[in-house]
Image 1 (tube, rainbow over the protein chains, first blue to last red):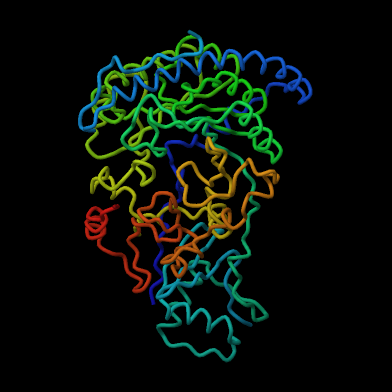
Image 2 (image 1 turned 90 degrees about the vertical axis):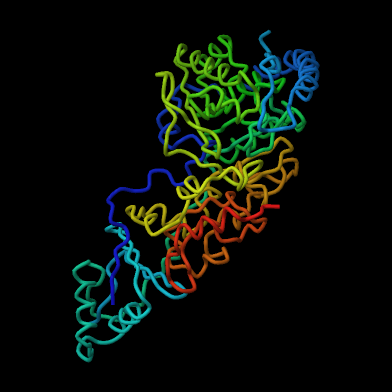
Length: 96
Length: 408
């Protein structure tokens, strides 16, 4: 009758999931913000005005994105072993 | 007097073998059925009338030396590990704001490209944020597609940064410029980027856009210059060499993520070496037992219990890579708290075919979305333990079997 000890290490598995998309617990905990928050009422008031303005800007921007889509579709190669030229990289940017 | 299992020692029964989980000393023991039968016998028989063979006495001595059993005046039933429970609360949420992407990465979990058109409106985004805030979520990540191709990305980031404690945006960095860095700095926004190799050509083979490496690395330069908190994510896959580190700008973590079978990720992107890093083997259990993880695995799924993924069409999934099960849709007027299904959060190995009778089921972590089956209840394809016979399978045989699997 053998009592086989498996967990010979004293250390825990540091991060079981380890997914590319997931920030580590360390970075999540380290960087929590301490800044004083505005109240929900203050934020809602601020945002009502801001949303109206951003809606107009966004309509203009979407046109640019739509054009960009067609450029990109043309640029993809069928064979995944090859890849397309640098000219295809879009420069869409709300700041420009 | 009776023998009894020591405090925080649990016997977990499997089909052909059993395990002793010692949570105080953080140790896991694998034992034969005969041994657990002996434990059962000594714990249910008065020591005054107990008769043991020499071999049995030696085995009990070993248990005593390992502090796995003690004595009690009364007969005690074995403690039930299922009583270790954890409260489920959502602490982190991915919000997919669009599926459109200006790259077309070979392995993309979301199969994003320029042909994808699902977009979350700004109005829907604010509704999502409000519902998440209502259930106490403090940490979110905006993801796509490429978030910076969304017409309202600036407003969305600002809105989120004003309300959540931690906001990260996952981007390919192609569109990041100095103005964006100033914006990140002002709003304390974190950035995550994927780089697949130190070699530009190798990286571009993944993104299928020549020049993408240069653009992403330039974004990293800017993030460093502006002191923006950022992290570099890497996924390892077949045919892509990480190359030699020739820069101080970033480091690719050699222990990081191996390609998962989600989205465009598939078996053809795995090599035997990469698959070997995923395998659940005897070595997997050499880490110290983490009592918190055990409680989590007993209660449900470690990831599903505390995370959500909101897609651009407002569907609520348990993980960024898991689309086989859903909590429902946020357009439903039901409060989010009521939509979240406890059976998904509580998706423990007790529900998984091939795991539910495994003695390691509460010590073992598997990534549910990393699956080659449409069946959410399927045993992980990279497990090398034969539950029926209580034996570890030859790793090379498992690797051959997986790599010859046709996902179509």
